Length: 136
Image 1: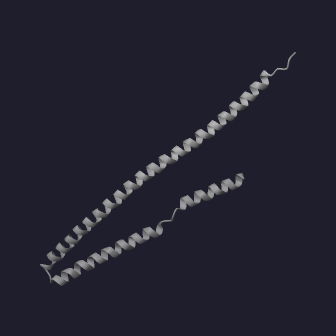
Image 2 (image 1 turned 180 degrees about the horizontal axis):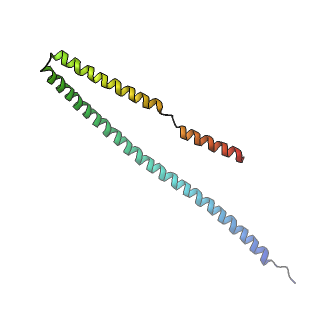
């Protein structure tokens, strides 16, 4: 009986096919990662552009709002000047606005001090590092 080479040939073809599939899988995975990175870059660029436009619009709005607020303050001083001397009217409005500003500043400072920078992220990263260290 002659040796059976068909089984050996099939095994070799199977190995070639397996390595070819594995190579193709790696190539496809690399292409997928490249495409995802390109998409993320594109989306990030669009988001950055929108953020710049939003910040510029916000800045212009803030300037216009400030001009309006200053006009209202001037009107308040002029209206109060009908009742008291102009310098007293300006002093009253100035003191009131300063007191309001100090109160707002103290409230903002309390909120700012209460913020723990990235505490949940730090905790999560520490837990992940501990998990990886246990598995190694």
